[in-house]
Image 1 (cartoon, one colour):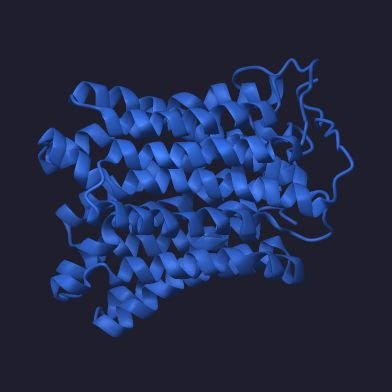
Image 2 (cartoon, rainbow, N blue to C red):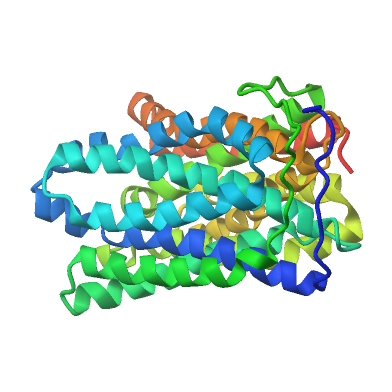
Length: 387
């Protein structure tokens, strides 16, 4: 039945082998996305898009992500996360090359929808693999996988900077990443978990139970904060902190550094203090960090606040996915897909809500709202039955 846990067929390898293989998949997924992000400006210049037009075009990416949610939840149960991950991540790399080859706006939109679709299918499949790997250990390890994704972001940005400096066009840049991606997938394929359930009757849409909805809402609030930091941190430093142009990205960099670092130490904290406590601390750090940056928006103080926010949001989504994967009412893949659906809405609506509040009031007011979302993480984690 769809509500039963899928049986994972282990093939005799040591847990560290599975962990390395799944970690490599996280890294490649992050590298593909970061490679695209590093060349957006180049593609914008090639297609002669204005900032407003680019903003409209980029909305195709979350459209693809949303379209993928019901399919991925069904497919991960029907064909297994290993097969879905293999197809999705290879397709992810191929579509990256397509993005680098576009000559018209309509081609870019179509490729971005497909890229978003493959991205979310990869996300759900690789997190399902991570849940299966975590079950082989006596301690949490989920956050470290997400740390590898963040590390890949830095790597992709560095490679992108080098490619731009060498004046290498995106198509050749992306083709190199695609080749590396295929090689890594082929090497790791035999070391991924075989969790296919040939008798699965999982529906395309599954209604999560109350515990999963609560987990989804916790991730929803955290993803509002994360999405806002991605899109508005640079603007906040420019318009509120009033730093010189050369320093406007320092807040974002500080946030990204502590978010990546936090993911590598979150598992230890979760093992020592429990999931509920780490979610409470995460929400508290997010709220305090944002309030610090709002109340006293000077350069050193704002940097300190953004460092705290990075630590705060770093562990929420990995810990929530880990808890969802242990659901007793849905299979790991379906549970992760359900939680991902709820949380991703927060990632989508966060940036525009911040823009609306900034227009109606001020940017400092909108960042106060994000701090409130951090406080909601604390409240929801306190009320939710999480272990």
